[in-house]
Length: 142
Image (cartoon, rainbow, N blue to C red; front, side, top):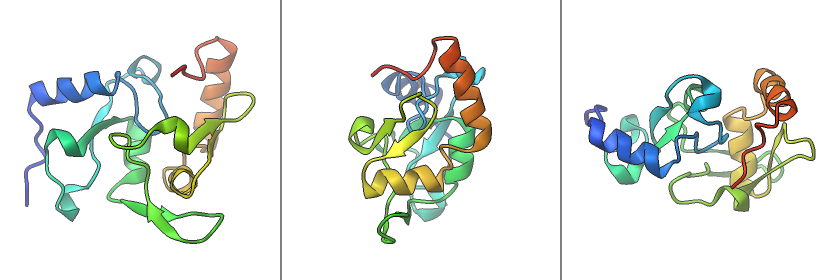
């Protein structure tokens, strides 16, 4: 099994590339109140390596819900599709915010499957987003 250890210089490089925010929900380290997790896009358990091309930032919530998943079912069409890949995919092509900025809406099969699989609109985070919106901190601007 490959090592999950990611050298500090590589962690820093990935964090800078990700602009210090989660690749899935876009929450920043500042709003999370803690550093983001280095995420293996293809999990080590599935043969993924601890190399730049396979790493991105994720908040603890998104990383925990993603676990070892690389695909999920699109709730609209029922097909199993790859999850959104924040290193390769463009967020605004697959997602958008609802009118009040509290819900992430999947626009594509990949986006919809990712919203469901990673529970991007779980009740706890929606409450937090409402507070962030009222403070003018949310939604993030691209």
